[in-house]
Image (cartoon, rainbow, N blue to C red; front, side):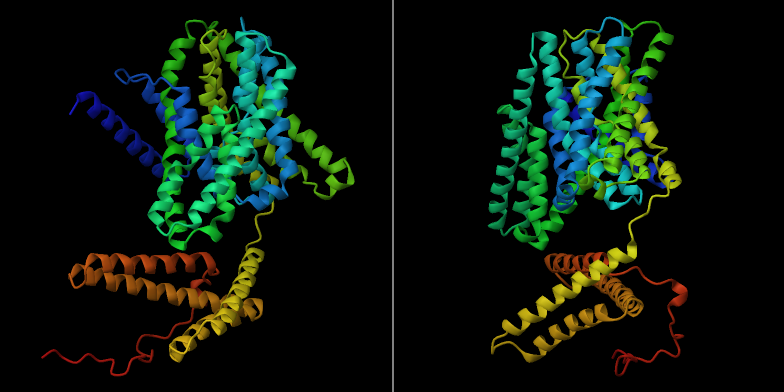
Length: 551
């Protein structure tokens, strides 16, 4: 085998191992995985003998960004996005434009030798927040549902606006551009990107509806982000918007067009892909630091001036978000009656203002700047400062959220909604059971199905406390049974009494039931409430429980 190929494989394997190890240890220690990966990558990049990482912008944009966006979009609620559309648009369009201008003018004013076009290009580079970092934080914190939806929706949609602004700024660097052209490009990007995304989403929905194989379904989903992104880009549309809309549409239609097996397989695969890619990107950001610094020091001013410039630019990024969110909150609080009805409090506004982490899009976009951009290497270093600074700021977000005393999602209310929905589903199942049986169906089978459904339905109809206790008891005992069933299958496999295909099929069935039980059941009551009989008093549930001696 070619030594170069072997070296590449070793490098990729090492990259994945380091990513998994650092992320795992960070989670156990309560540290931020993105910050840890950036820090370790930055330290490693300065070790002699470690090759400098040269970021290929097209590789990030076309290779990593589409699957990252798609993985985030398919697990984001289209219903919630539509319900909070006005707030999301204020951030994904209004805030991006405000940051683009504010930071662009600041960079033009404080960085020596930077033209206005180059300053605005940098403003476009750092304008979009990072969907990966935002979702990582929102997943760890018990934030209000509305707030999580707004943050996730903003980070999914603002990339498209920022990249259009970047393209206009790059055009201004290399030639002359007029506002009319920029407006037309923005309209084309949105219309074409949205059209391609919805078309791809609809087309793949129809294909999925006809697929009977979970493997084929999942395999198709792995290339879907690229099928949406690349044509949209080639048609001068927004590939980002195309991927996001396709993912939202497919995620929304999933229960109607996919089998349970396909949904479980796709979910597991995309969770793994998202985990590897999103964390690998932060390690890549850190590893690129040495190369960025090496290029920047050749044109950078003295050290203290560079530190001052970095602080001013980072403050401009942070303050632009704070100011815009403050204006938006004021509009909701004191504006038209329709907006006042949807008002959010100042506490929510503060939480949105401080959740402005940057990441993969900023990293890729800054390397899209053409070689003739004045101070290009210096702008790349400033972009790294902004990424690192906002990620470090994210470390304080949990403490800020606690100080704001934002109401966590109401667990009891959410459980009640799940219970009511289960009751409706069970009722529909019982009605179908009355219609489906034929003369060939055994009455015992029908009665068993009816008893199972009626037990769940009657449990839901009990008073709140009784229902929760009964369902929790059912879940606890069934989980214990599942554990014993899995152990029995494991022993049978070890003894070689069954073929592997049978073992795998039974284990998959047990796993699916355990997953469904985990999702639908209420939390188990405290152990002190569980009253069990001593072993010697527990009556046997088997006739002739004593084993007969072997002959």
